[in-house]
Length: 354
Ligand SMILES: Nc1ncnc2c1ncn2[C@@H]1O[C@H](COP(=O)(O)OP(=O)(O)OP(=O)(O)O)[C@@H](O)[C@H]1O
Image 1: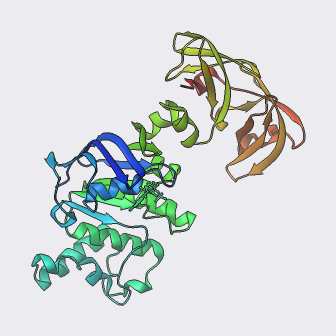
Image 2 (image 1 turned 180 degrees about the horizontal axis):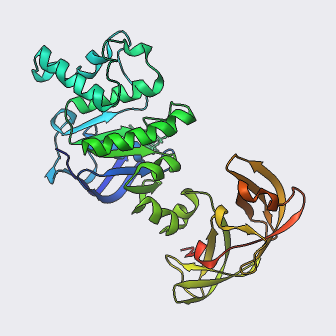
């Protein structure tokens, strides 16, 4: 059975380091929930407080509506998977998966049957007798997950489990993990500093910075409607052009910038007369364009396969990043040239700087 996880105003101070401050959110039972943020923002500390390895200095952790205060990791319905896996290389895959079951008093045939069920679940049927040291990185990762699931946790806590894998395998494992989570219905809380990983897999994402919660939202909402300047810059690439907001009307905001007056959707804190910034996604900038036109000096065009990334500087000095689909590569400007780009107001957002 999967459980909900609620953090109510939790904080953690190590000596003089304030690692986490006043974090509140609720993860629904059966949800794939990610915590995203740069290194040192407090992600691992939150996971360790949920698992019971450390007690918060303030606030409460509730799992399945039950207050976990004073309960150690063994008394909580959670299992944790770490960045560096600790599979036993000279033990068979099946024994690795069944490792935690003996301590729970399960007989040998029961353990074997359970491990075989889990092997089917992770699509490694027939691999039970292999030594785990003979598996590929992605296969080992799946075995580690099966081992964690064997003890039937209500909540699985995953600490950057894909970070040691190469890009192709990481992308493949995203889909695998997502499918596995849906099949089992177990609540997953997944921490990562890789925003594309969080966006691709999660039902919802919590974005953290410096121990503070910035926003909790679906991947799409984070991308389209960032609640803070930090989220606008950290989630996805963006072009950020500062200025003064001059008008907010009908859901749109006009902002005066060093590059002229630009219009985008009015986002959080957009108020006429206040300093603000317009954020435009690279894919929203198109060569040419009639409304919202910006001119830039082109420095580099990086061909990435399905698209090309154009780098340069706007006339005001801000960095330009525009992605041009490969089908329109002929329109990409030449390095060293000057080029104009336009964007639709609906594809940019204006936030207050406060
Ligand atoms: N046991 C500890 N003692 C003292 N300070 C700690 C301890 N654990 C974490 N910190 C500090 O708390 C802050 C948050 O650390 P945490 O490991 O939670 O960050 P993170 O977001 O998981 O980073 P990373 O992605 O690098 O793992 C950091 O400043 C870290 O140095």
